[in-house]
Image 1 (cartoon, rainbow, N blue to C red):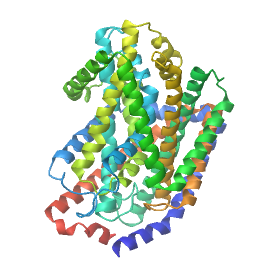
Image 2: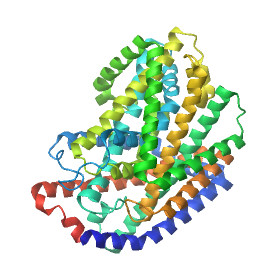
Image 3: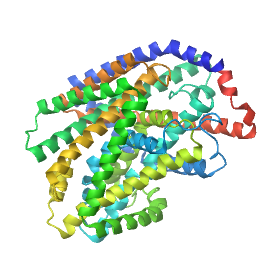
Image 4: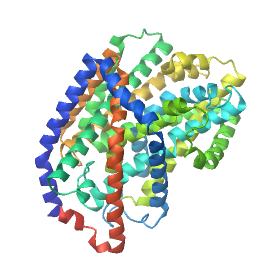
Length: 514
C-alpha cells in the first residue's frame, strides 16, 4: 500500500514537471535557434569557468566516485540486491551489458576510436609528438577518458536510483533519494528542480550527440559512396532516425532497445575482430596488453593530475575535464536507464558489470583502432593525422579503407553508427517518459511520442543552424548543479544502506515514511 500511495502522489505531480520541462526546453531551444552566438557566448562563458576556475573540483569528485564504486563493489554492501532478496535479474547478463554499453557511449567510441589516439599521438601534453613515447601516452590518455572514471560516474548515478527504486519501492527519478533528506514545501521545490534539470540534461545532451552522429554518418556516406554532404542529407538521416527510434520506442524495453543493443554489439564485435585479424595483429595485441599494464599502474597518478606547473591548463580543459564533465552531464540519462535495466542484481555484480566489463572492451577497442592508426602513422603510409586535424567525422572511414573490403566496412560502420544513435534516442525517449510519469517503469506511448518528437525538433534545429556547441554547452552547464545533486543523493544512499545493514528488517521504512 505504501508503494501504491507513493506512486499515486507522484503521478499527480507529473503534469507540472512535464509542463515546466517542455516550456524551458522550448525557451532554451528557441534561444539557441534564433541567437546561437549569443547563447553560445552565455553558456560558453560559464563552461569556461567550470573548466578553468574549478578544475580541481571535477577531478576530485570524479576520482571520488571511482573510489566509492570500488568500496561498494568489494566492501560490506556488495551482497545487497537491487530489489527484494528473492528477486533475480530481468535481463540476461549479455543483454544487460549490451544495453548499458549502447546507452552509455556506444556511438562515441566509433566517432573517437581513431581520432582521439591520433590527436594525442600528434600533440601529447608536455611531450614531443610522433614518437614511441607519444604513442604510449596517447593510448594511456584515451583509456583514462573512456575507462573507469566514465563508468564509475554512470555506476554511482545508477546505483543510488536503483537502490531507492527497487530496494525501497520508490520512483525512478533524480529526486527520489533527495526525498529522504528534504521534507516539506522547500524539499518538494528542490526535488522538482532536480527532476527538471535532469530532463533538460537529457534533451540537450541527446540533441548534441545525435547531431554529431548525423554529421559522422554524412561524412561516411561522402567517403564511401561519394555522396555530397548537404543539409538536406543531414535532415534525411534525421528523418530516418526519427522513424526508427519511434518505432523501436513503441515496442517496449524488452523488444526494441534490447534487440537493437544486441545487434549493435554483434556488429561492433565483428568489426573489431576483423580489424584485429586483418590488421597488424601482433602490434594490436601487444598494445592491448601494454595498455592494461599502463592503465592500472598509472591510474592513481593520472586520477589526480592537473598540470599546474607545466602551463597545460588549456589542454586539460579541452580534453580530460571536458570528458569528465560530459559524463557527469549524461549522468541523469544513463543513470536512470541503467538503473531501470538492473533490477535484481547484487551491488557487487552491478558495479563489476557496469565498470570493469565496458572498460575492458573500451581498452581493446582503442588498442585495435587507435593502435592500428598509430601503426599506420609510424610504419605505414600515414595521412590520418592530417585528416583528423581537418575532418574528424571522416577519420574512421578513411581508416577502414586500409583494410580489405574497406568500402563495405565503411558501409557497415555507417549502419552501426545509425543503430547506436537509434538506441541512444530510444533510451533517452524512454527515460524522459519515465520521468514525466513520476518514475513509472513502463511509461505510456503518448509520452514517448511527445519526447521523441521534441528531441527530433531540437536536433533538427542544431543541424540546420550548425549550433552543435549550443547543445553541448547547455548539457555541460547542467553538470555543475547535477554534481551537487549527486553528492546529496550519495549522502542519502549511504545513510539508508548503513541503516539497512544495521537493521535488515527495516528496509521498507523509507517508502512507508513517504
